Image (tube, rainbow, N blue to C red; front, side, top):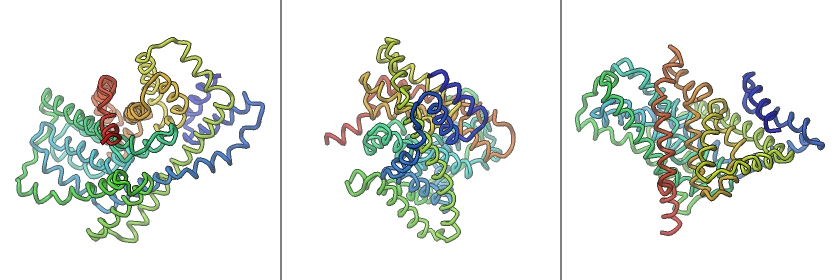
Amino acid sequence: MLLITLLVLIGLLALAIPVAAALGVLGLTLSAIYSKLPLSLAMGEIAWGTSNNFLLVAIPFFVLLGEILLRSGMAERMYNALVLWVPWLPGGLMHSNIAACAMFAATSGSSVATAATIGTVALGEVEKRGYSERLFLGTIAAGGTLGILIPPSINMIVYGVLTDTSIPKLYLAGFLPGVILASLFSLTVIAICLLRPGMGGTPTITSWSQRFAALPDLLPPLIVFLAVLGSIYAGWATATESAALGVIAAVAIAAWHRRLTVRMLLVAFEGTMRTTAMIMAILLAAYFLNFVITSIGLTGQVNRFITSLGLSKLELLLVVVGFYFVLGMFMETLSMMVATVPIIAPILFKAGYDQVWFGIIVIILMELAMITPPVGINLYVVQGLRKRGRIDDVIIGAAPFVITMMLMIVVLVVWPDVALWLPGLAANP
């Protein structure tokens, strides 16, 4: 049963069938082969129950928030301000890419939106400053993945819904690892540029007066971040309501800068509807697939198989990490989460791993999938913005950051409190 499931899924993906359709067809195929009951009749109820979840309402709000930040020019001003503050580091503007991705991640909740936004404003600097194009592209692709680790995060909301884990706790748990991972990305750039100085480009010459003059352009993302997370931890709003407050803050800032127009809003609404429709299609198909595999006993079969291996707690985690690393090369991250977390998470929880801590591990593994070929979505986003050359350049440029992410997973395994300290502090003030 497990072998047939994997073969059918790989076959559907190999045919380049859209992910949502592939998951739905897989569910119907397994139902037809292994179930005596017409499980397809449950599709309507599953679709309604899934789309009616209050927490998932946050998804279109966070997508809209990122669209407004991009369309109103706030992201571009933020990037230009950061450019003035980091030219003294080996690698210059590549640190601006990472820092801008981290700041935008603290408002958008999406890795694809983060990579696309920062890539749009940064790519013009590659040739101008003489940077190694591959490494420069790699910093955008890898930095973009921070969008789902630094809160707020759409993927954290989905994980929380799938495992019944507190969203505010996940947000707190993701903050410190997100900052550390962004710092490790910058250290990776520094190390490479020290070993090969020619890759670091020409430093930007700035004055302190220019730097201080640009500081106001860094305030809008901070205001949005405080509106979203501050409202949650002050007890004023739920995770969903805080997303709406973030949109209101972004609209107010756009109006303040006189960038709030009907055309801008219409373009932002259209982009939001397209992205939300894609996400919800994947969620609905994946929830139906989960219902089918539970009904036919596949979940129990997987549990029995893993239990029969007699693995220790650490060995079990290593197997899961390896599984996600390989699967992430071939599946889109959100669909991979929805299809696998309901099966794998209970096994890890039973082994004694913390729900919140494992959520951060899963998110980093999803980030890893975004920059590992052949299906690493951020690689294609950056290449699409570049509009020339081969995608091999982006893949090679992102490769050092794959190692950095694996190092971050090791850090979390050795020191779990890196993720659990802030949630514990909030629970016991």
